[in-house]
Image (cartoon, rainbow, N blue to C red):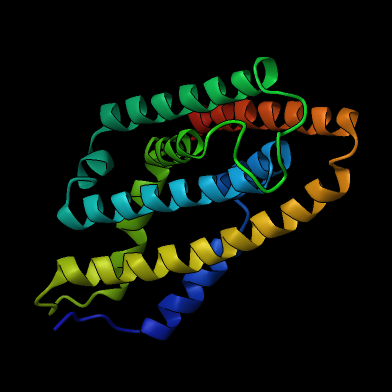
Length: 208
């Protein structure tokens, strides 16, 4: 017996939380508008994979170390901030002004953006702490399989979040398609995405 209670409430709460703009929303939107819909899709899959790994770690109790170790929390947060700033600087100085394709993934490659999405999510300790704080509220103390209950709730949360993120990519892609003919505007979007990632990194390292 999984011991999950108030499942309907959990689903509604998960959807509302996923709809609330946060770091992942800004990251995916920035990627899509700067590098095309293919880059947005790769980012969504990468972030969703990172959330799945966070779910597994939290279910196994490994992430609990972060909740009780100030040093571990600080170093992981600093690592995530540095990585975001690094991605932002790469966009500012190294990315082309116009993506090779609005729908394609030629610049840069799909696997590269996917991996960056995974790392961006894994290096955000707040995601781990969120899973540890949110999921257990819907698992009863009498659960005989808390691990699988945690996994079940995590899969529901990641699924609803992934669907919403794909909607974000589609909406952002529509804007990219309309602006694709303007090299100046696409260059500004690329530059703005770089600044956005740097700002996210600074905000992460300054957050409590």
